[in-house]
Image 1: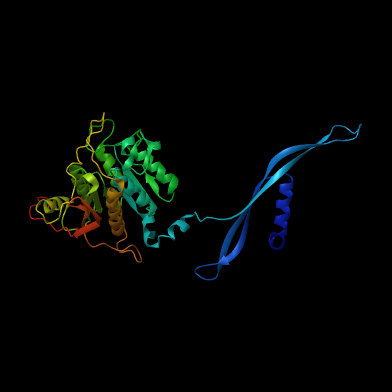
Image 2: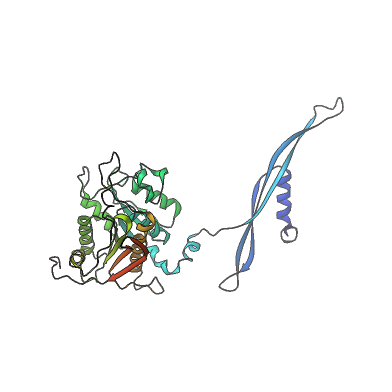
Length: 360
């Protein structure tokens, strides 16, 4: 084929191989385009002469030293190109194109928040800001998305570095990091050298959505209040012990109720509480002072997926041709009924003002 289409290239490749040189040639050709007409396609020829043996050619007496020649085993490969540019990435998710200009602040990087962060990166979010105060324990890798190789490292830097290396079209925002730190910060814990409120303000400045995976009711109320104060949509996600269920809550500037309304509605039965394993909430590992819970990754990540879906739907609202809008504010997940495993079942609700809510 080369002898007819590009004889100069063939001659150059052949000459380099004979001289023991390695190289790579890129060939441009015309191919059909799915949109009609033609476009540039690429093929590559790689060649590598592997040295094998040295041969000495004897000469007659009086004609100097024997001449040494080297022989080669020639390796030649023909292969195509793989699309890796940003346009190649985004053309596979056209409904999410507007996300490249969005900023999401994620608080809480446990077994629900960390997989959510990866899903946001896969969706092509323009910038992710991460906040968590914990490090990765080897025992938690049964539910955390990265394994033993990152044990002992801070969750914020580890997940941020992984996203930057593997999803380069998503930036990791760091302006909210405490001074001289790897980004770790526990909201509400005693700190020195910086003001936590200032870090929270920097985290939310310019953000398009707050994604709360802390699973701590006090922090949930604080972040929901801060988001409401700044007219930023807020999405809260949490699983339950045993991985039997979970819930997703969204509060936008247009939502009637608030997070406290949601708590009241759950308390009086207007919104169902997710099922949970009563024996799965008091697990204390050997040598550890913290209480944790039992649950499998494939169960808790059902909540992550639903939370990211709701958040992306919210970010795409009113964008033509974008990801569809979801009309409900609350989703409650059931994965087990009477301790029998079922396919994921979601109940959905709107979130009106609750008459017992002092906030509203």
